Image (cartoon, rainbow, N blue to C red; front, side, top):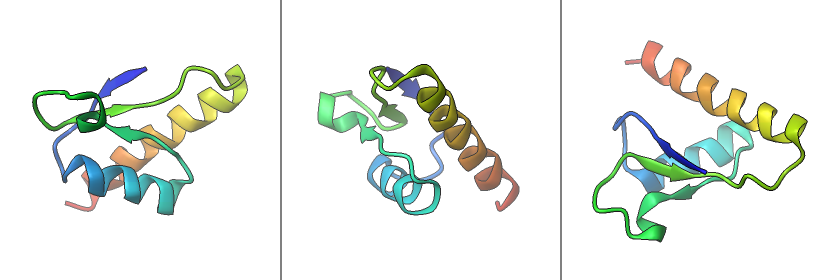
Length: 69
């Protein structure tokens, strides 16, 4: 699934940070030739509870990023 996200950092820094701090693996939009920053790609294949937990972690990542600015 494609997620448009706030442009707080480069997509690469974002996905590496989410993996290191939140345990979420996502791909930067440039892997899929998106014309600009601010997109990450997540898999829709995990079981629903796993997917929901991952999306919750992504949302918490941005909530923490917003409060730390």
